[in-house]
Image 1 (cartoon, one colour):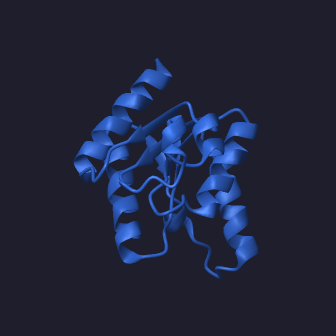
Image 2: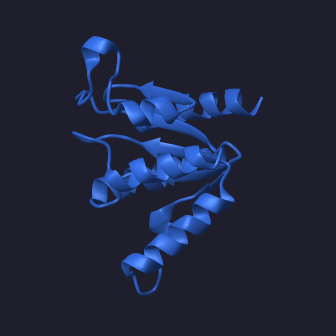
Length: 143
């Protein structure tokens, strides 16, 4: 499966998590477009947008990390674009904070939840646990 790995990439821990998750998905036989690994030589907003759009066009599935008090705005946009173009979407969240309306069964942004094929909420999941769960979900989507 060709995966676009969306998620925040603005801190060293975020970038390390993304890279390690991408490596585990690749070890499981998937191809992964990791935006932080494809940063343009001159990282203007337009250049980043164009690189990431090429990655989204190439992928058939978006795996989105939705950690944080509210999912990253770029990640949310990428999921919306993926939904509009018929791609599969897997949301993953290890953050135990729930910014959504838990009383109505919406653990976070209703637009993200509604557009996703699968959403995994695994509070404080380990990297290996997260990767295993995502690989299992991807197998279900491809079969």
